[in-house]
Image 1 (tube, helix red, strand yellow):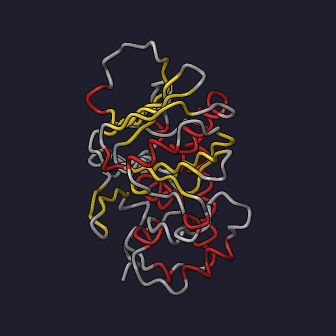
Image 2 (cartoon, one colour):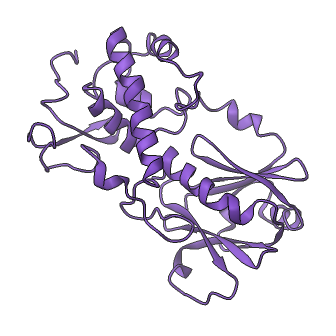
Length: 278
């Protein structure tokens, strides 16, 4: 699933190519992806609107338009955005294209989604997205003090809490696993049980993991690609995520995989001691 670093990479890649350009048309091959308004209304209202800014909030891609509205895309499990020339006749992506957004630059923005879980909405007020999400983990206002305060009342396993988008925005399975490894915290630890020192380590680890992943253009295991089609590189730097059965790069102990609130979770049983999980 594309998480904060992948979506941030897409935003950074798209900005030079799409900001200031106008949507010329929309072709929907999976109308059910449109949450609101109706699919027909989105196809009628979007053409002619200029993209003033491409932004990110959590895992959402936001195209701010000159009308004051915003086109909001969520890639979900297997979505990706690809930018190509309208003259490109390549059929590589055709089985997975759910929408094509035409641009006055002569390019097309393709929403590709193998499992067809991604969504699109045309909304007037993006604050409704803000209200659904917790703070941005890379925002300077998200401090260790704020993190400790938010954890203090949470009894759920720390892995589950980090993946809760209402708690903190943009972190999913991969980067929660990596951050907990960096902080030497077992994923089953009750969130409220983290000490002040552990919380400070976790805060630092979250920032390190996400910043490194952004520098490496995200992580590619299956569907995620940058708008130009290039894969991310962060997967080569992972310590635990998606490394079940391989040995820990620090202590050579086999990496284990367990379910945490129905999420596959990778950790090192030695570096992330389970003795304090009760």
